[in-house]
Image (cartoon, rainbow, N blue to C red; front, side, top):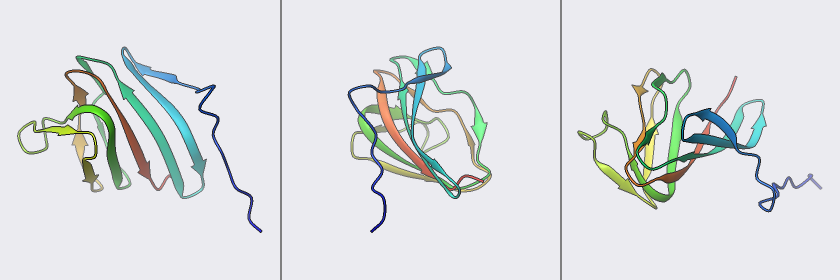
Length: 105
């Protein structure tokens, strides 16, 4: 039987990425990376590019990326796929939490 991994939600380990942006690493194993990102109201995730594909699921709030459909607002339940080489800067007018998963190296 395989070991079941868990993360304790009663003691989240949020780490500062930039002002008003935090991440909580849920899983980081070779070839697997899962992280929750919390973007505060009016804040932006730093500009970055992807060396591996990134998948984003909006858990709560509103997520905006100026490079996607002219800054379309993506609400909870939305899914985005960023291919290798994508450069962007995510933000949120009212705050949001997103689940990001990718294949780390």
